[in-house]
Length: 269
Image 1: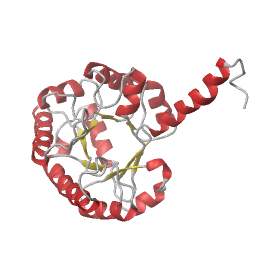
Image 2: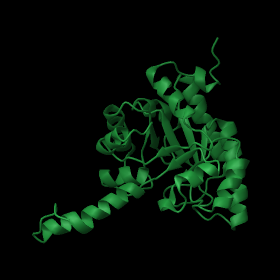
Image 3: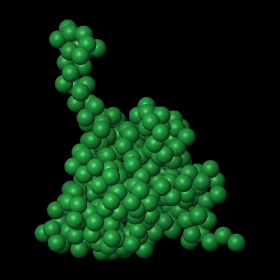
Image 4: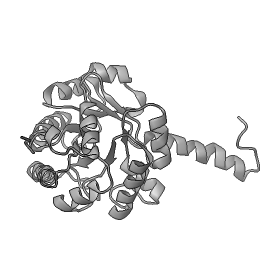
């Protein structure tokens, strides 16, 4: 007999198997490393490199769609981009879905699941203004997304991003306390992982990894801490966000395209 409250019993479809595989990759001390993709081509590069899953970055995806980050891209285009990435690779795909683009939980799950992606980030500050969402409201939202997924027999790996550090919500000690509290509540509401974006201090990361009762996701932070150091701190997932795309596109703009514009050969060092 299956129990829909248990992640492993929610969905026995191929997508459900990918969700279960993605969930198992979140191991404290042996983190899932996700150099976030932004389109089908970059997702294929991630797969060819031997990575076990593909994640997207909302900022990077919005940029290639011609929009700013912060839910400025129409949700239809974001979902279509996710679908193209899923079709391009055989790996589990998890999507940075900001705060859900204003979709009600049931519609969010139904439309998101149609892309074939099996994981999503949901954040707890409002994209247009950066204000933190009340913790009870965000907890209820995450619980409603999980309940909708169970009702639709869809297994989703929910990465609950919490933004107290990013938004500098209060003094450092208040940011830490809020993150620990929100992290525990979000996991209890049905999230699989907690993403305290904006934290880079190793002592704080250790406190979060030890104090949040579930997997913790940390941003790579342009290499200030190595992957080995993040693993030693107990991190279970490492994200690169839009950093790789921005680094690559800076090279396009500052070197390759500039060389073409000035009549030079862009293929010579």
